[in-house]
Amino acid sequence: MPAGEGGSGRRETARIVICAPTSLPAFFPDDLEGTCALCQQGVRFRPHVPARRVLICLQCYLVHAEPGAACEVLEEASAEWAAIGLEVPRC
Image (spheres, rainbow, N blue to C red):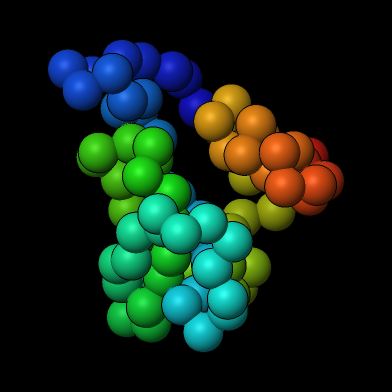
């Protein structure tokens, strides 16, 4: 996914953000909530995700993603996961 900067300083080129369902506990107190674009389930995401994005829950991503689809872990997400001791996923 190409990177770009928007007026807010957030990356603006991500098209899909894969999110945790709200049925799981939150890792961070400042998580935001929204709705999966495919199944309408509640999802939780970080404040630094791009302003222009489509929120997709993890379950829908696993069901609908094309094999070999490219993904990118944002630097902000990697730093947050490492700070709480979680292994950063590899795409």
